Length: 214
Ligand SMILES: [Zn+2]
Ligand SMILES: [Zn+2]
Image 1 (cartoon, rainbow, N blue to C red):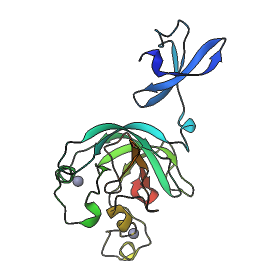
Image 2 (image 1 turned 30 degrees about the horizontal axis):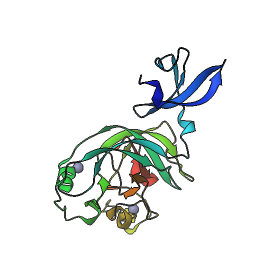
Image 3 (image 1 turned 90 degrees about the vertical axis):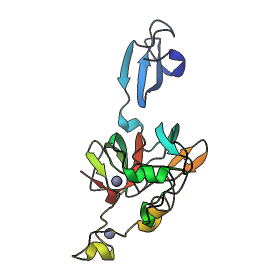
Image 4 (image 1 turned 120 degrees about the vertical axis):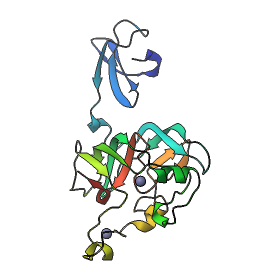
């Protein structure tokens, strides 16, 4: 448990202050009964319901520009919009494609190239934190994989029998944006792009619903 100054008083309980703050990325409530130096009295995890529809602050490895080391930053992850899913990553892999992007080496595949600044990472696993309107394939609490090759089921390539390289969102994915043409990530007031439609080098990420599978 961290020092009390990090917590903000939000209520009282039998005249004891209740404070809200973060331990790592997990939001907690703390009832203090012996003053500010001992916050570790009673904690209760704040349910995901209280984060639903709100931005989440968490850590991510941000690639500010090609050829520079990744930088661990506190970022803001906006809530999922229509047909989008916000997940809490529990694991991520580091693939050579991520290393190539960090080093500024193009893949030659437009939708797999990075648009800086961005959050790299395209291999991961996580738990659905919240979903936007009209999402029917997953619900909060589901364990899911992010897909850098989604399946929209509607584009010409999805409808072919000899091809599964979905092109449904490739234009926006290539620009490091969600299908509506905007990003869900900001850091220090700057828009941070998605990468490969996944951005798994973050504690939370937002994906189109066609890019998660459980
Ligand atoms: Zn890979
Ligand atoms: Zn498709």
